[in-house]
Structures are given as structure tokens and as C-alpha cells.
Length: 350
Image (cartoon, rainbow, N blue to C red; front, side, top):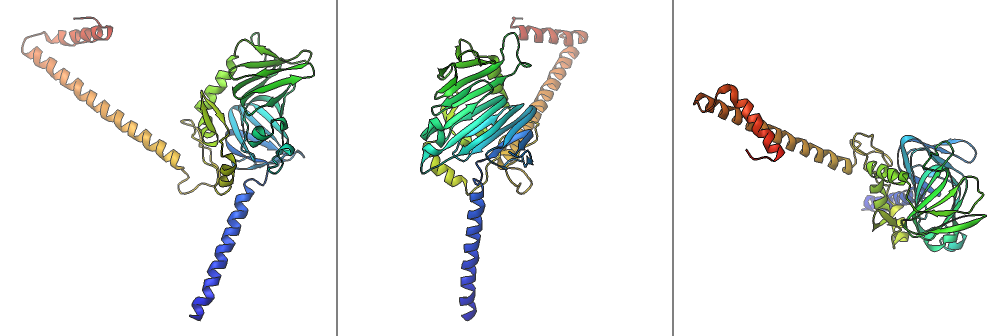
């Protein structure tokens, strides 16, 4: 009994230590202003002092960091402490000027970002919901504010400009509303509309009566690389490919502290991107399900192929039988069969 009474507190003590350690590690998830939630390709994070920081999926982000995606197939999703997400498309550079969420006094929060180049999709979180005036996305020519928004901003420089696409800042809204402004004026952008401010800064922003094609190309890129799947797990879908913050976002953020982020679904043939350490054989259940589905499709195709072969063999045997019975010359069997096949394909009657 003395031995049992001695070990029981020891077990409780170790359990308490484990709880404290787990709590410490979970809080470390949001110790910085955000983290790299998902990504693929060449992702680079440079600190405010110029040092190159860890850029693996799950790595933390701090105010003053610059995140870039180098290459036509590189992308990254940044998940911020207030639940917002910023999707960096290929060849994009984003500087986090200052990011701070003050739960007790939301008006003290700050979401100050600088899109140096490339294309960004921003889905705001608690800062955008509780204190929209605390959000500002700067570009080389404009500043964009939000009102609880899912919006996409693209910077076209002089080298990228064409006869149909001017150099400047473009912004389109999927849900909510944005305001694009500079010292000459501002314009309010509603869902489905596009605002534009050309480089040079000599005029006010204006609305476009068309949607530039590069927005659709970026949307196709997002779907093809599993980005939309990741955003669907982070945010609430409101239809037409748009997202918004969940009504219970605060509780969701607290729950996220106790578990690592999930994997995104990679495009077929691409290297999987992992969040945190791999477990088991290095495959997430998402990947395992995809591989199992692919194997089932292959088996179905093989069975269909075998059935087709058997059907063709039966047709050849029947043709030979007819030829041997004298119903049709042997040298005409194959030719007539091909003619009938061509007629069926054309929808003609024999």
C-alpha cells in the first residue's frame, strides 16, 4: 500500500507536466502573428533584419517578415492569429508591416500589409470583422481597406504590362467590400467588380467595366493546386467560390491551438506539402484516400479493357464463322465490319 500511495502522486505529477508541456506547445502555434498554413514550391521568408528564416509549412511569421513565392508553380497560404488568411500566388512578395490582434480592445489591432509584387487573395478574420479601419493593404500605387472581405489584389509592373493590361494595381471583391484610395480620391468596390489604379499616382482609382483575364487564370491555378480546398477548411463558404470568416471564429481559433494544421490536397503528380511532422508512412489520410480511389479507377479501367478485348475476340470469331458458312467472303468480313463501325459513329443507318 505504501508503494501504491507513493506512485499515485507521481503519475498525477507526470500527467500534469504533460498537460503543461502540451499547452505550452499549443500556444506556441500562435506565439507569432501567423504561420505558413500550406504551400508548395520555392517559398522564402526573410526577417526584418534581413536574415533568412525557416520557410517550411507550419513555420511561424512575425511582424516585419517578407514572404515570397518564386517560380510559376510556387504558392503559399498564410494563416494569421486573428483567423485571416492570405494566399500568395506565384511570383508574389508580401511584407508584413505590422500585425497585431488585441482581443480586449479590437480598435488597437493592426493588419498592415504591403503587396510589393504579384497577386494576393485576402480573406479577413477578426480584425476585419471587429475593426475594419485597422486593416490596410498597401501596393506601390494604392492603399486598400476592407469591410469584412474576401478580395483579390494584383500588382502589374511595367515589365508585365501589355497592350490590354496596364501597369498598376487591380482589386476585385468576392464577398464584402473594399475601398481603393490614394491622395487623389477613392473608389468603393462591390462583389464582382474590379477597381484599378495605374502606376504613376497622378489620378484617382477608377472602376473597370471588364474583368481582366488574369483573375480567372489565378482562380484556375487555385483550383488545380488544392488551394481552394485549404481555404474551404479554414473559412466558411458563401457560394460562388467566395469565403468569409466563421461566425464562431474565436472558438475555432482556440481549438486550433491544440492541433497541428492539416495537409492540403496536392495536384496529381506534384510533391505533397506537409504541415508539421509526418506520421507513419508519411501519408495523410487524405492522400491515402486519393491513392485508393486512383487504384479503384485503374482496376475498373483494366476490367473494362478486358471486356472490350473479349468482345472484339467474339466479333472476330463470329465473322470467321460467317465466312466459313459462305455467307460472306472472308476478305470482305473485316472491310464490311469497319464500314458498319464508321456508319454507327456518324449516326447513319445501314
